[in-house]
Image (tube, rainbow, N blue to C red; front, side, top):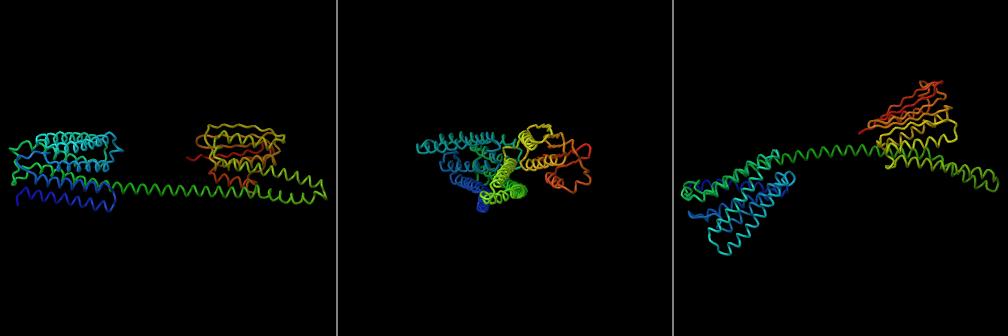
Length: 445
């Protein structure tokens, strides 16, 4: 067996094995990049076979229309493969536009070669057309290679090396055809054939690209792991959000039961009593109806407070402060104590889950001051910043011993609400200087 034939047999075997590997990888992973690369390798290998069967000492490249068309198909597959391997469309749009231009050049060449073939032009014209288009494509490929060098991706190094081998093999194969004295296609010397240089370039390219695909698969697996970790973190976050939502639902159910249940039951009982009193005791009936009206207004007010505390449009600090002022003025409307408000907000939103508990704490403290302090002045200070919210209610009335009272009355529920917000509740009180309660609540990012 001649040395050229032996080298070709060895190199063809490598190419077909790589094509088979790519095809099997496609059936395993269902990614278009694999079958496109397999088609590319088969087209190139079959082109080399046609080059051999069509070869002669006077052979001129580009004279065989079927060989040039097969090469063009191989280049189309090559461009598509390279675009997906490196992600050129996302990472370098300009290179992607150049590659699209190369596809247009290939389409124009195929059509022009077909017209030349049908027009039975001379071999010189065919070869000249072939050389012009091939050198144009090679130049554009070198420009793309130079540009993607800047991407700094690990897989790019394999692609660059393979592309350089491929382009170098093609350029040498084009050049040697024009030196028939040195490259006379001697079967005993494989390096007198232009196909040898092209095939060596393609084999080197295939090896580099195979390593690049292996690296890309590894990167994809690592990316899948990262995505899975992100999904797990998101699921955990969603679980925490669901727990918060369940807590809000439970709190709403408790508030509806505690604050509205008894009043609604009272309205029902009083309505039955009023119905019986209409004839026997009209005065009592009118009194019952008046009580029903007062209770109904209370229910409406409490319901509005619950809806307000949960409504997303009430998130701003200023709106929250306005609500505190409105509630305080309404509560002390018929009370001689004077209210002093000091509100400072920076527009920082107050989340609904904080707003609701903060409002209930404020409401409880204002009620306590109204019922127990007998104060002449009530001082309310509310401040919000990027990091926390501070609420302070101070009176100048009758205080209490916080050391002994703190564990025995409604302040326990206030402490629990503060703990649910990760807030600090500080109470100072004595019999001569009134009571001061300060709540500091952090705003979590």
